[in-house]
Every structure is written in structure tokens, then in C-alpha cells.
Amino acid sequence: MAGHSKWANIQHRKGRQDKLRSKLFSKLSKEITVAAKMGDPDPEKNPRLRLAVKEAKGQSMPKDNIERAIKKAVGGEGEAYEEIRYEGYGPNGVAVIVETMTDNRNRTASNVRSLFTKHGGNLGETGSVGFMFDRKGAVRYPATVGDADTVMMAAIEAGAEDVESGEEEHIIWCADTDLNEVSNALEAALGESESTKLVWRPTTTTEMGFEEMQKLMRLMDALEDDDDVQTVTTNFEASDAVMAQLDEA
Image (tube, rainbow, N blue to C red; front, top):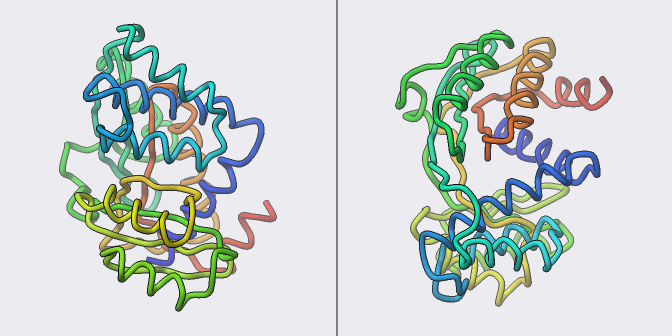
């Protein structure tokens, strides 16, 4: 699981960079609008919307942006988005899952396929790599929220399945169907999280060297830069030395 955690850390750092903030907020707004359209516009009555709003707040998205995204759904504005998942292989056979929201599936499929090909990967059929992952809920807190024992006790009482504690953060894992309930219990015990969302957690990993990781990062950056792409997940594993090289590159 170390590789997945490290990639999550890379995403986390990138998400904090100003140059990516606008694109991040755009993706969060799209999820909020879709969630509000699919259910009640009141987050307290709509678990998916509540989680989307909680994630947006964790990423410091302005309150006005959140309210505007919900109002778009209530007013019937915005495109009718379709959620499509793509699966494929990146450099060195690493598994990649790409989740999209699109108003034009032909455009999105063409773009995703082209990016995989351009960056040394191959787009596969649905299910081609999905068996290497479990759908889980992930709640992230900074290390400053408390020591590992404190967080572990809060997680157990909340009904979580697992906790990963590191120097920078705690990741609390739970069943996908329990995320809303678990996150509410954690919020009562530990305060507001930095991130609360459904993710793909690898059950098997692929070891990557420095050059392979550089190629993979280019593929993932290109995919994340596509306006239709919401999330990109991979099952890479890399040593601390390789990760340090990437930070310095």
C-alpha cells in the first residue's frame, strides 16, 4: 500500500499548488452539481452531495463556489454529465483507472485513448485492471490532529476498517458504503478532515523505477489536465529513493 499512499501524497501536494487550483475547483464544482442534480440539494439529506461538499471544504474551496454549484443544479443549469470509468495500463504495466464526467462520451474516449498511447500506455476494456483495486472510503487528516493511537481509537469507534499513519498525515479507510457515517463520526471526534472521498485502493502493486515513474507522472499529469477527467488512480509502488528523485527532478 506504500506506493498508493505516496501517490496520494503527490496528488495532495499538487492540489495545493496555485496553478492547479482553478482546475481542481472546476472538478469539485462538477461533482457537487451532479450530486445535487441526482438527489436532494440539501447536503444533510443527500449523502453524495454531503461528501462532495466536505471534500470541497477540505480543499479550501470558497463557500460561494460551493453554493453556486448547488444552485446550478437546483436551477436546472449546466450540462447533463455522464459518468464513465476507463481502465488501462501505463509504463511497466502499471494499472490505471480514470474516472470521468462528460457531456460527450466520444470526445472523452478519444482523448483518453490518445493520452494513453502518447505516453506509453494502453487503454483496456472495462474491468481489465479493476480487479486489482477495491472501492473504499478514505478520510485524510493531518498528522497534527493527534498521534497514531488517538486516531486509531477514533477510527475504531467510527467503524472504520484500517488506518495508515505517517509523518505528514493519517489515512482512515472504510467500506465504500460506510463513508458518510464514518466520516461524520470522525468529524465529531477529530474535527473537519482535509479530504473525504471514495477512492480505488490497490490490492496488488507494480514496482516502478525512476525513469518509469517519470513516464507515469507525465501520463497522469496529462490525464488530470483533461477537463472531462475527475480522478486518476494507479497501483504503482516506488522506493523512498525513487520518490526523493522525483521530488528533486
